[in-house]
Length: 176
Image (cartoon, rainbow, N blue to C red; front, top):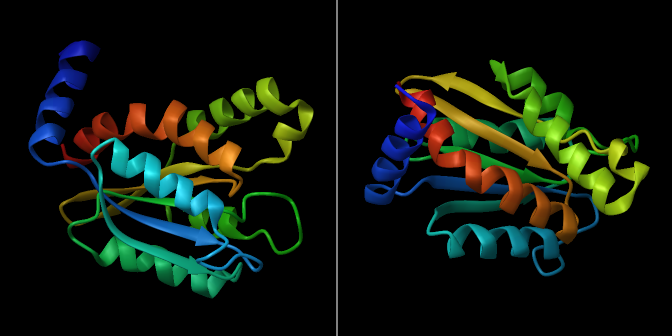
């Protein structure tokens, strides 16, 4: 089957049953009222016709992050969890370590492409992002995990340039 055939089949299936997502913000400083990146992410996802099942905000704490991701894994309706925050190099930035510990398949190209786009937009500081993505295997297929920085610009870039164009086809592949 060609790439076009795969994408066409994935899109037809997604149109009939749009992807269902969890959104997680990881931050020690943001509240639900000040989470501009999470708000922007929710707006973009809903505008694309995706179903938002749950939105959480947890501190940058490995136990809290792991628990929120495991909640998404346990939700049989969830196709993916999209995470903002905790992807930098500050001492408290721990999202990436938790995600990498839980995923079974890493999508290396996601992080590589995100950093390339970031460098184009903001310069070499874009290399400080450790954005990552992967698949957590579970009964009935996998749960996709996308992590990105929490800034509005990073959310815009990762979601519009990478997550949305990849999501439906990736869901199709995890269910095969």
